[in-house]
Image (tube, rainbow, N blue to C red; front, side, top):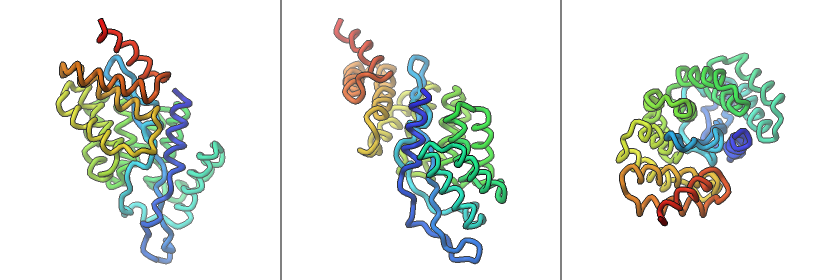
Length: 268
């Protein structure tokens, strides 16, 4: 689980920065591009299936969004520190990442991008309580920053707090319209609430938006969730196809192993 979480974090942090988004050239910002380059990916949690290992769910950039007011109010040095922290995490240099995040948050304790990145780092270390606190603070500090909403909702889903996740997921979908992760997490939450038709729509949209760059080990979790939902809707044929696709994507991973076992029941 930890290695999968680390993989997800790295996939997100190694995504190219949103260099096309630039701040106004004020004396403080210096017109430096903002690159909110951190996030994580989700798993399936329906009682019999676990969610995608933490960070793995966020593989691939979860959609770009415009620069928020919160990001415009911080200095160029704080933004530079966050970018250095992201690069340090990508190189598995956690002490440097923590040092750079402390620099950014020392001058701007409400800097949502830095709080979110620190929350992701804490998730990667298994410090769920600290991560939840940072992510909650980030959503309060900058309600317009979609990534913090997405990651917090994913953490809530992992904890079985689907009602809390559903508070933030509509905002994440609105702010990150091309994010497959937001729809995946929405499907997880709705599945737990037993709203299977709505969950099916969301996981189908997640698959539609999933880029080819997402590793098959991650896509397997999405197909597996869709298979479980189809079973609840008594669509055995569709569920079988999704279990077979899960097995094709990642035969040796957890969803693949579960799918192989469940497919045996279709053949008896």
